[in-house]
Length: 236
Ligand SMILES: [Zn+2]
Image 1: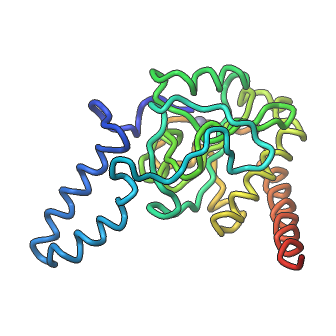
Image 2: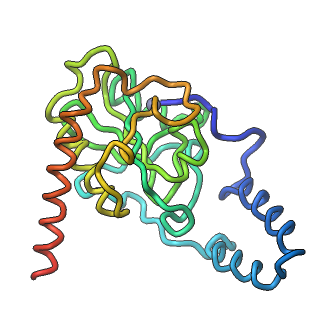
C-alpha cells in the first residue's frame, strides 16, 4: 500500500479536474505553434465523455474479473479515467497489505487513506475488485506508473512466507494472466513488478519472501489457459 505520495497536492477537483487543468495548459502552450483547431479537436475527442451528463456507463457491482466480488473503494483513493483509451495499461504491480483482507478493504473505503489498489486477494483465493480497471488507482506512489498499471494487493505480511498460500497465489496468477490478456502485454517480470520496483517508490512490498519464480510460473500457465479459453470461444 502507499501513503498519499503520487496524488499531487491541493484539493482534488471532481473527475480528475486537476489533470484537465494541466492538459489545458499544455494544449494552450502548443496551440500557438501547431494550430489550435487540430489540437482542440483532439482534446475534445479525448474528453467528450467528461462533459456533464455524458459519461461511459459504470454499472454498480460490475467487475472486470469474472468471479471477483465488487467492494467499492472511496472515490478519494482513485481518479476517473478511460483506460486503455487515454492511458495504455502495460503493468501489473504486486503489493502485500501488511495486514488482513478486511483491513485492506476498510482502508480502501476510507477517503482519508489516499490510496487503494484495484484488487485485493484473500488468503483463500477470494478476490475483491475495489476500483474499475478503466480508472487510475493510487497504489504505486508514482503518477505515471499509476496511470499505466493495475494494482493487486495480497492479504498477509511480507516477512511471513506462509501467508502466500497456493490458493492465493493461484487466484492472483489467474487475475494477472487475465489482465495481461485483456491489455495484450507479455506475462514477464518486466511487466509484472513488485511495488518495490516502481521508480521512486518508498515501499518494500511484496518483500523478499514473495515467491516470484513460483508465481511467474503460475502466471505463464494461467496465461496459456486464458489463451485456450479465448481460442475455444472463437471456435464456437
Ligand atoms: Zn504496496
